[in-house]
Amino acid sequence: MWRGLVPTMLILFLTSCAVEQDLAPSPRGYPVHGIDVSKFQGDIDWRAVKKSGVDFAFIKATEGGDRFDERFRENWSGAGGAGVARGAYHFYYFCRPAADQADWFIRHVPNDRLALPPVLDMEWNGHSPTCPKKKPRAHVLSEMRIFLDKIERHFGRKAIIYTSVDFHEEILEGEFTDHQFWLRSVAGSPTKKFKNRPWRFWQFTGTGAVGGVEGEVDRNVFGGTRKAWGKWLKELKEDQPETSDTEPG
Image 1 (cartoon, one colour):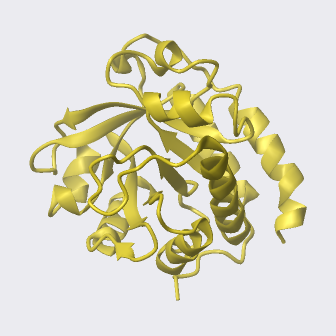
Image 2 (cartoon, rainbow, N blue to C red):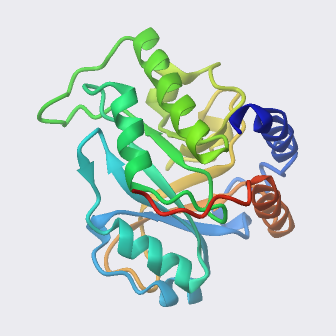
Image 3 (cartoon, rainbow, N blue to C red):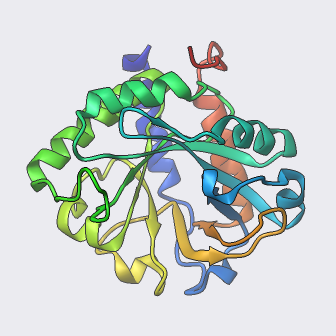
């Protein structure tokens, strides 16, 4: 199935690159807004989130090869029930084989043809009590390709890569040009902070406020107009095989 999808996925990616970037230097200039959440946001009123103007949410599912976010299932269900476009993300752990991590993600995330593409979160974690050291660039890139290949074969679509300015500079610059990126840039537009990197999503703050969420939450924008957002979602759905929509085992 995956081999047959490759040409279609490439066309989808190239089409998506035409989405307007740089509508404005401020996130306020982008009409499509979203959040990303984990267990740390506690109980979320997803209908209130939707009413506050949130169009999409990336929800933490897994970390490493043995950590599952305890609120993933309720957040996944709540977002979908409220009409918020939802996607799952995996937080990468540098001291566990990529293949194990991909299996762990696949085990816990539904293969839902209506969902946003899966996300691989790549950033240094120097505060980790068990794996604080940085790995060599060649090793990280090799492991990323293993992870991405495995989940993309399972979900039948290209994943999105999330990253920070420093990790991009040290590891990702010039790599994975066939993937869409979700970039963290809290001190200005990612177009200014990331060298030669088109972006699909921009995380512009980690201290946002949104109705339905108590306390601070990461806020994001989609890099295009509302019309482009609708077109992108439609293309994602049309590209998915009809046999998806399965719950994880």
